[in-house]
Image 1 (cartoon, rainbow, N blue to C red):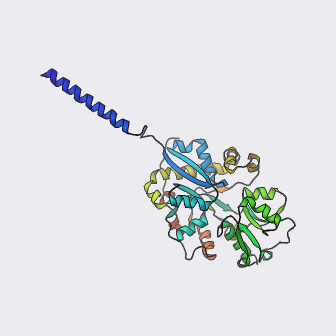
Image 2 (cartoon, one colour):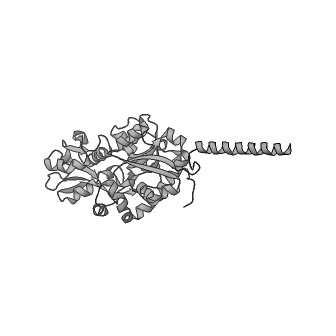
Image 3 (spheres, one colour):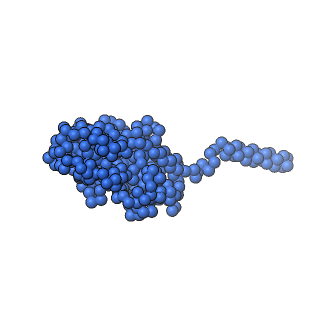
Length: 331
């Protein structure tokens, strides 16, 4: 009898072991340590540098995140992809995000992108060197390009024209990719253009234009130009990994703002620029923390120029993920 009991016990133990092996086979390998995957989208702009640097230096991997960065032609395309679920996180100009939020689209900011700093300009309004245009009033009745209608380029240009004696209501803005602006100026199809780097740097370096103004200063001396965002549903479902992502961006932005030269080999290929060209440009300043004071000037401009039809509380645009301290992990 004891012998039979021992055999049964052995058989029972073997059955448990076999069951454990079978269950393990059904589980993903390394389930406890598998990185959390995120699909990101951005246009080719300098404010994506912290993300590229964090990817290159292994910061995301150490935080248990697997990041896939996709390049888009515009912030509008990125926003559509996030809303449609093709992307988890996107980076776009703040202005269309304000408009979307104002119209009830459930998007929230999780991290800042580029911050306009008057003392370190990365854009400007240009005209041809021999153009007769020397003032805002000279732009009345003229045609100007913008990457997307009613974006920050158009809005800041209108704000500068109106603040300096011109009438922006008489100016007609047409959609034109920034890469095609210099040719349009030379052909006389547009009279002036506001450009940001890298296009501003390239056009200015051509020797064929002169800088007329810094239009963004008409909005504020400092404000948020772009931001990383996600849908409210995605944020609610993935708060913990998003908190890790936000902390990584904060750390990477702080580092890359102070080490631009180190980032050139990482960022230039994403832009499609020669490293020497990027190294010679004024680089973007990327924010580390989402600040209401950096958002409000853009909301005010959006209201003034009819992009939104009612006031919007800047705080409503910010996710709690952007505000709360993120968890730490081994470095």
